[in-house]
Length: 210
Image (cartoon, rainbow, N blue to C red; front, side, top):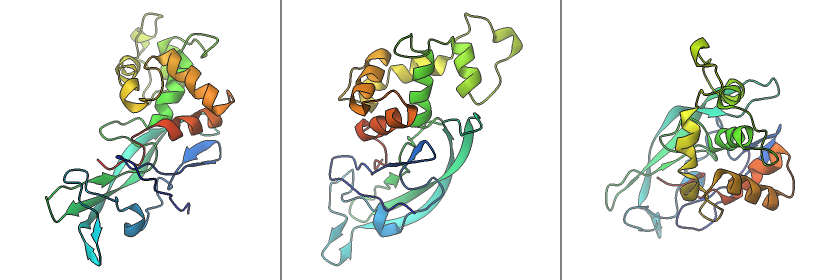
């Protein structure tokens, strides 16, 4: 099990490593110890999670949720189940949640899957320049219905995700092409594992307390 390294910031970020070409932090199924995942502060009242021997942020149970991760070696997009650790602040009653690296609140697709989708639809030479229909065939969870397989078919999630780039990667350009160019420069490579590792290092909400 990978030991997480918490970095002090307004939103906790966790370390990542590459396993089998897919970036992971704590494994999606490897539930971290309650003390390892405990936030340093309550995100609402900003009280420290511990005051001496007194614990302010108590463990408040574990849930699971589903998340889409990039295609594995067999080329198939995967829907996996991941852990979701919850805490409760005894000072203000907030219930912050900690998720694995790459899993975002209220989004089925992981940040890793979203970056791969961006590389598929971005125009060459930045991306592969695929149509939305072809990109969805490669990365989407469901089959495109026969009458939607034309060139004009739109993968609407791409448009929605694109509007969030400035929030998810605030230190990089807020356009699809600008994001990918910036990630490639930081990665020093065009290989997907390196690109995703750079994306993880820049993404402010991976492993963030919500």
